[in-house]
Amino acid sequence: MSCITWNPWHGCHKISAGCAHCYVYRRDASIKKDASVVMRTKDFYLPMRRTRDGSYKIPGGSRLDTCFTSDFFVEEADKWRPEIWEMMKIRGDLSFFFITKRIERMEKCLPQDWGEKGYPNVSIACTVENQAMADKRLPVYLKAPLRSRSIVCSPLLERIDLKKYLAEDVTHLTAAGESGPEARVCDYEWVLDLRRQCVEAGTSFYFMQTGALFRKDGKLYRVERKIQHSQARKAGIDYSAPKKRPPDDQLPLFE
Ligand code: SF4
Image (cartoon, rainbow, N blue to C red; front, side):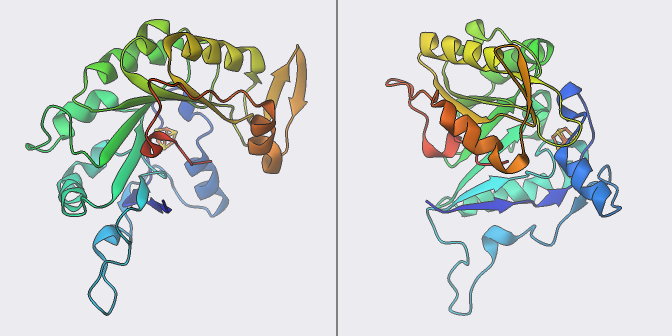
């Protein structure tokens, strides 16, 4: 399956501890752009673009990682989102995946025909970086009208107890440390603890990246950007749950 990043709008607002060193802000600052200004992009209609022979430019079966330089449910996008839902419906041959920190806004942002489990080609993951955000967002997320659920702990900022949430129908959990020059520590013991909870609950687990400041066995390592993913791979701790195996569209590929 080919994966394409689709950012129909760009820019966001920091809302919790996980946003402190947001890569959108970091990258925009490097080109003197204000990341807090939310704007539609030139790719807004990307899924609908056609080639000269009239076929869609993005072939059916592709996955679109959506809104990776913003949040799908950011307030400014309320006026644009109805068109996005419409495109997602028309392109039922594509799958769309996004991760949100604003799950509490989901209900008021859904289209009328979303139904009890949502459009079959749209997957929504919820991200939590610490215990407080897990306890705030996950009860809302677990009640949301969705057919599958996955949690993203990135950047992982502390040990998080997710046992009571994983017992529900969460198929997949991703853990990752923080990258960038101001990265906060990610402790390997927190990662292993999440993995233990996943194995117990029968939830698939994916260690995506170490982050730039990684503590293992009490020793602190500064990890170069280019090897943060490969070091996580080397740890060899991913776990594929036999019963709650995640569909491909639940596996985040973002950095
Ligand atoms: S919600 Fe995501 S994109 Fe928005 S500021 Fe926070 S980390 Fe950045």
